[in-house]
Image (spheres, rainbow, N blue to C red):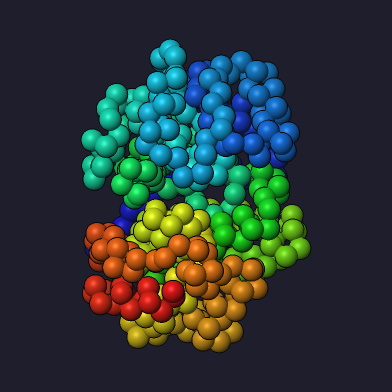
Length: 369
């Protein structure tokens, strides 16, 4: 058996690394689409600094701001229709996972000239070069081959994937994450934590990927409380790098049961992704415990200082995140609908260490209601 390790072509990291954007883009081209989020980059002053740097290096950009969290396919179509001109050399996404995923989809659309829905389930091998720089420490989209888009009409998400979606250039500047609120720091950090755990407890794991997974698990467990409760810049810096490593791990080992179950919670009840993942983590660990290899279970027990599921519950409470679905939504929860949606995620379920039945999923959702 052999394995493939996918990574961005070039990775820059460290405080102030975003200041290299203009000079790095010169190696790719001179004309780009530049996507950012709704306000944080502007409020922090970084957007103006970036634009000045791009002008200095004679980089021409079409700036599109206001990319929302959980962008829908309709929004992306609207953005595509607003783009005037052609011959772009790449697409830049500086923002959270939604911004970077949107940049990936625009990069596909401008190259393939196809409806994105036609590309579902297909290995995408052609897109404009993608430049990604995160402003949160969670999704790992700056390193992955995935883009997730919301289908608002059907209240679900669809996944685009392929080697062309791995960024050509990834810039991890932790200073861009320093303005995150404690809540955003917490739930994006738990998103990265779930990536690290799922990749470690994945059928697709291997000795190389485990290095990334284990280091991210340990760093996030020890660092996230300080980042959330003390707003520590040093802790946020370490979280930025840990989230990147977790992204590498999940890109190569893939997600499993947590993501299969959390996506319906997000889609139907608008629970933020990291919060949904966190709610499911303790039950996921209890369910999989009998199937976790002895050496891996020992690693988790040593890092957490006790029973993994119990310690993760304490960890979630420490960073002020909910343990139950009822704490995250006031809506009546349709467990049967959640189960049906979960069972549709066959690839995720097949990647879980323990075989998963419909009854298992029902019982797990009931456990976390």
